[in-house]
Image (cartoon, rainbow over all chains, first blue to last red; front, side):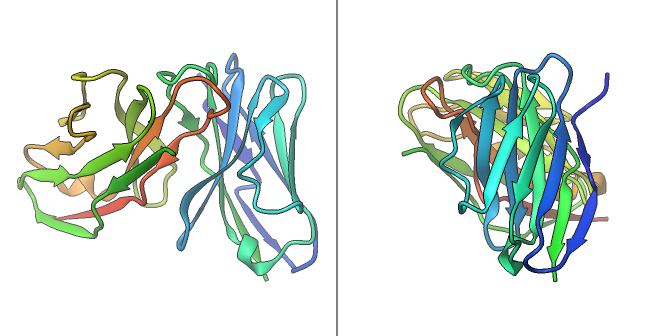
Length: 116
Length: 114
């Protein structure tokens, strides 16, 4: 079946602009996760959703970052007033359920964000 | 708190050599452990997992055993191929609470030469 999809695959934006990144999880997966991958920081957790709720927002780097999920499906990650340090690959993953540790997470191809 | 430490790379091996990538973890309770692989230009893929002590995960000739006594989950392969060149990430996920996310090690880049 279809895997996790993300759009756009690449995004170049000017410093100070807002960007929206989209993630479409695997059908039937109730949990959705956002991570970012950068050279200096490795794989960094941002936020996760169980259904439409986000129990843990502790990973969001600043209040410029926000995320929502509607209908238990698609999620958008919004970065306001982008800064150069936001440049990274933003990865989305989904799993059957967040609470059970044994459910593996399936990752999308990522969105490469470049802030100029 | 929860953390994962894996050996730093890069690791360079000749084809058919034996591979070990060390991974140790710190966690409360009984986490599940994973190895993910990222091939050049591609996304993260699950390579194998183990969900309880003494479980052995295996896939594509790779193996890792969940050792609770040494809090380790080392990745091994008996004979690597050029196509195994990739970055390997060890990760853990704990049960319940608000900890829904995977906690990753920093990754180990493997290069296999013909």
